[in-house]
Amino acid sequence: MELQDLLYSQGFGPRRVCLGLVQHGLVTVDGAPVTDPHAEVEPEHVTFTVEGKAWTYHAKAYVMLHKPAGHECSQRPSAWPSIYTLLPAPLRQRPSKGGTPGVQAIGRLDQDTTGLLLLSDDGTFIHRMGSPKHHVPKVYEVTTADPVRDEHIARLLAGVVLDDDPRPVRAAACECTGADTLRLTLTEGKYHQVKRMVAAVGNRVTALHRSRIGRLELPADLPAGGWRWLTPAQVAEASAKAV
Image (cartoon, rainbow, N blue to C red; front, side, top):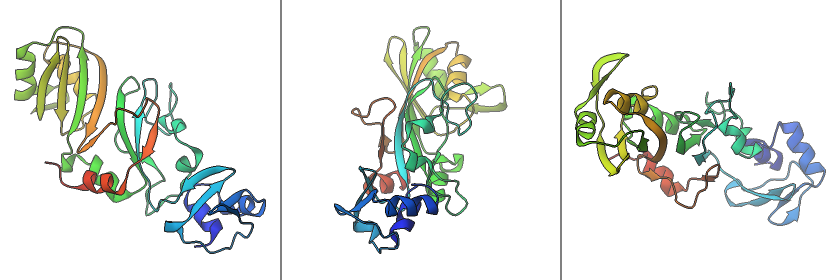
């Protein structure tokens, strides 16, 4: 792959910008400056920097983000900053592939909800992790306004009816984790589902945090607002059928 094409594929701007970065000596390959934009490189085995910042080639982007409160999961936020502002420019600017418009969030979290969010530019992975048909379990840590009672847990497991669907919606798992906290596992993705289900049993959500998606758990050492690449093993594990 030509160096300018490698930079373009990784989101460093249009091809003319990538060409200029190389020609102006702002790119190193394996520690040495390269000024020929047509220089051939092996993308899977190269180490390169752009304007002094190290970057690793990824044919497709698979990213986890610890979403903080006060951010919208939208490219065009209406009232709060976008979660995409938490990502470096190259990730935000990766070109579209196969109909997928660059890196996008898989599902959404409300602006006041925190926790694990996955992003990718792989359309197959996005569908596998985000489509309701695949029933990928999502685990939420819920804080409630009033104490959690046994009857709340029982009703959430048995199913509650929400105002937009006559069919009961059930938690795949639910357990009390404290006087006013519970852990709720869902395999559907209805609008404001956790908050509406808790309201339906006579309580109210005051804080909501997603700790797990399928087999991927939010790392304890990933701070709010932080992101990291998924490893190949994590991508394979996430894509495997949930058990």
